[in-house]
Image (cartoon, rainbow, N blue to C red):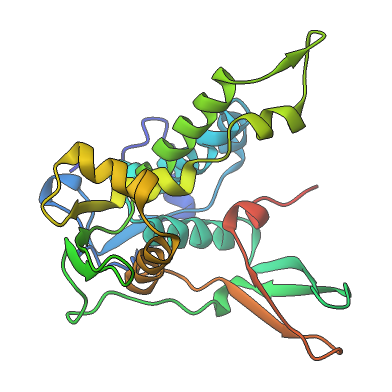
Length: 267
């Protein structure tokens, strides 16, 4: 394993220093060849990194940030989603601080609450010896089919998003030489969540790969799909980003905060 995968590393990297971070997965879900251990070392974003990020396509910025700020040599796409999110949050804290402005809107009375979230106070679930090894077995509650699944990686998300965006680009309706965003969304729905489910479900009974894919993407009852997604969320070692607030009208407001929403500050 390379000591530092960043070929542009300079004295400023050594001056700032890398901090050790224990991954929520504790490295338990990775193969020896992945190069991912239980602890990795991260540094904040430096001024020299801003030039790199400015020329990086928006959909590749999260991966590029990890490539710049993680000392160990591994492919960020192989990280569990929970580990990726955790490192992203740690780098954000080191780079910009831990306070994040958030807005909560009551679904009942529409009252808006502006508050600050301290990222250091986000709880995190960690892998334990009692957790299921991969593949994880499950019985679907509606069809009673026996399935096995793995926890999704960041690369699965990238693959699913790219596929969904490609389908949209191929099916855009054009009227009078202009593309209508409203028309585009009406042509092709977002398939990301279904594709992600297909990548993570490995087997369904004794189905072959083609039959399994058809079942997951076309024939699976919503109750079964929701069940598997909840099982994945339950078993995923990850920071817990749900924020709750009791509105004056008595409604409990819940919002899942995404790191993409708060990572960079506006100056």
